[in-house]
Length: 435
Image 1 (cartoon, rainbow, N blue to C red):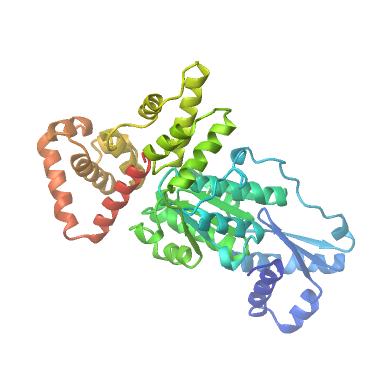
Image 2 (image 1 turned 90 degrees about the horizontal axis):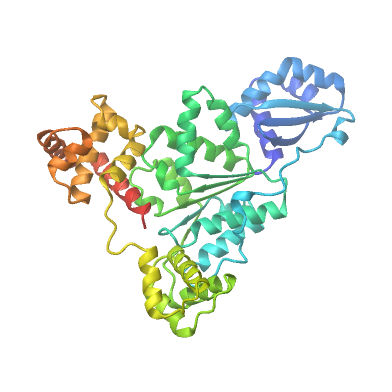
């Protein structure tokens, strides 16, 4: 269903299975769908008399048909006579502060990102087009995925200030869904996310493995997609590498447009350094620019951080040399490979299993908490240099219990592919937070 007319045709198909052809012809022949917005389906009929009959006899049937199509509840508004001329759209805010500064104009294009950039422009040119819906942008952290995501939102808002745009991080979606269930606000949550023209999700990898969250996201996806509206998501890896991603979602993503962003080549790194320095009013000679480009090869965000640091040094009267570049790099970037702390691992494992770090450290024995505790012990052991005693101190267990937990995970991983997938996804998520 790509238009309001398609939606109404779907409703009428369902109604025709429940009502006689005479009833359909008498009361619905002149009905015209107007719009679906903010959880409300607007319908027009020629006379107030017909409007009254439809409201009294068939409004529930129409809402049930909409629920069948979208797995979501809708209000029904029926206009009649001259009311259509006075019907106006709800005003929207003039700006989207969370997207300020993220534009296509200040996104530097090179060989490593030009395909993703072109796909993003395709979305702006024709939102909802089958060619670019959904658009799945993936690549390592710091390469510009979030910039493109927000640039799409900014550009579509500029074209149509009334467009309903939703931007959310995968982890925020998860947390808000859990909160809505606890507070009995599940329907409000669904209405918020499903009735949009453009849905943007950053870092979708963080919902992988969460059965309830993935199910909710799937229904959100279907509702938005089936109304012909646009979906764009980003991830640090492609769907095939998210081991615990729901197969239905993997199929939907891979059936859309997949666009990866690679590490920037030398020419792009140099162009980015010059652009960032120019915007900060900082002069860098060719030697310094080339030196920075040779030192920082994998992460645009790191390049920007180092240029900002050099700008600060320049403001204090220091001359920009290779030695100062090395100092700026050491200030901004950790030396050596990233080693997570036990608390990092516990926090990510807790988030994955939808429990709290306090649950993992507690004496509670519920199955999901116990599994999260065993996994935490195993990951701390393999990802850090912590001893069994120190792991036990963090998890409030003795070293024998920790050793038993680790052995259990190692034994179960030989028998359970799902557990291997879980370990793989948690490890990837820990690393992706710190690239």
